[in-house]
Image 1: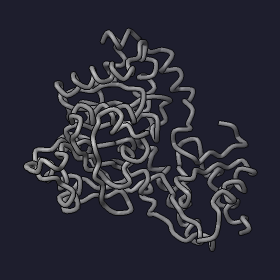
Image 2 (image 1 turned 30 degrees about the vertical axis):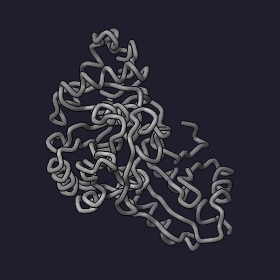
Image 3 (image 1 turned 90 degrees about the vertical axis):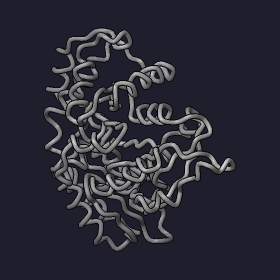
Image 4 (image 1 turned 45 degrees about the vertical axis):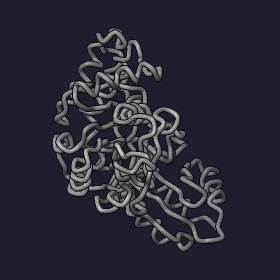
Length: 344
């Protein structure tokens, strides 16, 4: 990473470490579209075993794994229930409509949490021919737009009970699930008992350059593989990329706690800034804050950018700083100083 640049826009901006690059270069590869890339097969098996699920499918992105999952779970004209802040609803380019032809009903709080009781209010009666039938519930842990909020396995189990009661599919967008596992001290294997499908992203907090893995039953993944082909998501010697994911799983999971500590420290600093009106809880590696009314976030972004510091505007109101292994204590100190020096 350029020493002059402190990039807090996302944990997707990380570059492979030298050790990760060596692992990639040494990876045995085949042709994953033909099903014989040994490193891809190993990555899929590692994650399936870790989460207690039968099979996995390596894809280019978390958006693709989410979209494939929705397509397998639903038929055109069906309806999906999710949080109003869900990535699958807000940040996947209208893919639910474009790829699957489904409608969405949203609810929940401002931190990405959707309870079973709230989901019950969104459920469409199956005998009502005027309504789109509900087929799928999507949860997200951690919640990106919620500020990296951890949802908690107990709440997710309760929502899963609602889904089972009504014979609905249950998918987890686990783009940053390892952040939640580390923060809450949960077991990956417990998640496989709760969800029908799980999307795991390797290119966010874990630091791999590319890739997500979709987990589910063998039958589900067989169907998912066909959808991946239709979407053009098959990659040939993908083992070079899968090797980065394996390395990340072996070396970058426990260090997520460092990002969480830095985020908590940064959030404490932000909470004391006179121009900050609201701050979401920094449960994991994100700090989301809103400026006082009348202040333009673009002015603050320009102030920071002039000092080689980058944040992201989530919308016209909320700004986001994300901690990752390419920003350490020195970069956090630079950001805190720059935030304190902004003249409103």
